[in-house]
Image 1 (tube, one colour):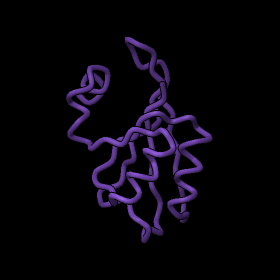
Image 2 (cartoon, rainbow, N blue to C red):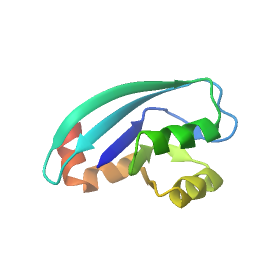
Image 3 (cartoon, one colour):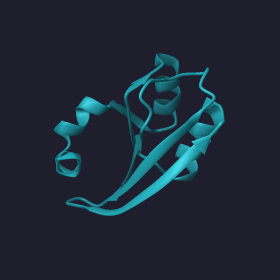
Image 4 (cartoon, one colour):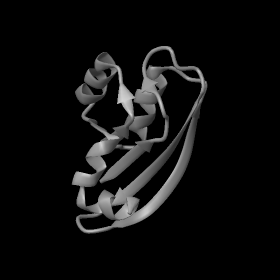
Length: 97
């Protein structure tokens, strides 16, 4: 499974125009097998949605997200979670400690 951590300290919404650094974690059932860094530059939410699909991201962690964008991502099959949920995920809890 691929998990994306969007390292943006404010809300993901239609108005963002800056860059978003992203860490993509490739996991199997018990461990993180690969860590990849990426940056999305000056694009819109549709570009971000396309990026999630082409990278086959199944789960994304964000600081905050517009409810409409959350629904869009979920309709695309991407689970949207908040950063504080990372502590509940056994692999990610190990990653952030």
